[in-house]
Length: 78
Length: 156
Image (cartoon, rainbow over all chains, first blue to last red; front, side, top):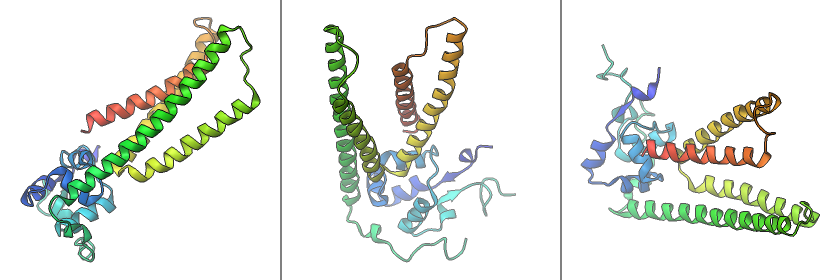
């Protein structure tokens, strides 16, 4: 099973709330605009350190940004 | 996840002024292009030097051997360029680019692992000529670069 297919995220929404471009977010995270785009579109799952950095940046829990479908209210929850 | 999930201890990046992130991203991109461009020019220069030198020797009907000093000098240059370039690149690439590089190198190595024995057995079977070392090397390099380009296109 390819877990990458199951992990969704709210990055685009959170970024839009702050009126940040992908490059702006990338610069704040220390990654490229392409990396932000790949994460947003679900083509790349970030490492745990980068996920924590995102959580810190948006002041959210990691599971409030990323959803593997098995968390509370996730798309795979019973 | 409880306390660790909300990592609220240090938030230096949130203190950026608006637009600072874009400037920082642009600066990182420029550095990356500068490093890649420098390595590319070094590789191109060395390649042309070796190619023209060998072509000139072939034209004059000279032996295919170089002086030991030239050979050792090129080895030193190559080792420094590859090792130094890898070290510098690892400092300027982000985790996505690193992951792509690992996958591309892995794919290139797997293809090389298959290509050489296949060519060797075909040669032994009388189907093709003997494996050519520089063709194998070029195949590995281009397979790796092709895979890297493919991953970039697919994930962008």
